[in-house]
Length: 405
Image (cartoon, rainbow, N blue to C red):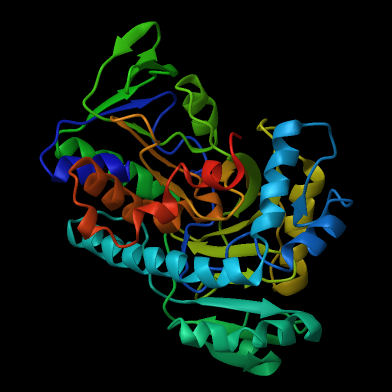
């Protein structure tokens, strides 16, 4: 939707082919964070060992269901390659810069009259173990060098800042630059704004194939061929399957995330809260709602609910907060993850009219507006205006390192 809006703002004729409806996928129930403070890629030095321990526990924050799946194990092999300190130093400035740009663009959308619960109230990362808290303090120098403003709080100070925290919280980090929003409201408002800009929303149109004709692609939807000057593939986790129909290999795997949205809450947190050891995010929403979002099931394509993982989210909330996390709306969605933790935004080699915009992982909301801006710049050939070097996000970067995926 952001890509459609930014292209239409440039005066281009745009149509969105949407199988279910705006926001029906991973945008509906996620945490809704825009967090420059959380710009460390999923692939980092501690991820491998921790992930191996977690994958044996179906209730852990990260679970990789054991099975023989060549594509998943190929992805994990690439993930191991990127789980290095050198990659983290390279990726953090990219992700931080993109998220800061998105913050500015979200404020521009608000200035245009869009209402989606956007608030820059910061974010509080809280810890219930001294070990995890001290490990977080060891990264402060890196954060400060990257311009991330952070305030360190001990347990009592954290509880004074946020009275909903339980006595188990031993410390916290407060990031004042971060923001949050209601993702479902956002996508609905973007759809409305897109139509004001003249975008055609074709709801219920399922793109089945991207047919390759020389160096161009044509979309086939419901048996009809749909030609376009440029085709933007922004289908989330399903971008991989559609790209393959055009001969493009993308190492993107789905990562299923869950959320529980509680209504009629007596008191909301003053800002979003990250329950750090549990990897659960708590987001205050409008109308007295609070959302608990977390967990990651890698390589799972179905949208069935795992009751054990939902209960893990509820248990974490009860441990960290003075809340009663029973009931509420339970949801899950698939997030598109790359092995290096960076999105894929760019033209694949050999195709003149295809732009891929996917692979944003857990940062889909954070990076949506800047992705729209990137796509518009690529379509219009404004390479010098891009906030990052396009080669860093190129769809071809994995083939250059590893060959065909």
